Length: 93
Image (cartoon, rainbow, N blue to C red):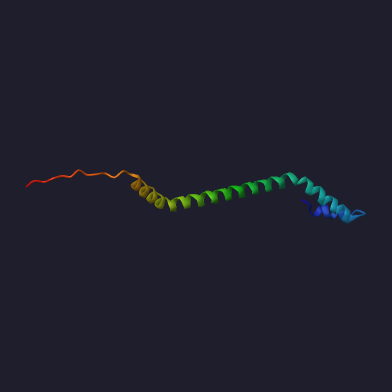
């Protein structure tokens, strides 16, 4: 980070603007690994958040559609089941 002492040191030279730009550029280059790590962690957290939201949405949809799907499967099972014939029972009284 470029602080007040760096700025005052740059302004006391012959070319203050160039010296300040050079100082800022050096500090930026020194901070690349830290900034890259921060950005990587932010991107990773964002990906995890999107994945969690997607999974939550899918599970919510499954929970909402489960009764309907169970009813459909039950109806299909009824249609595919063979017809049960009951024997004719005669009652004598």
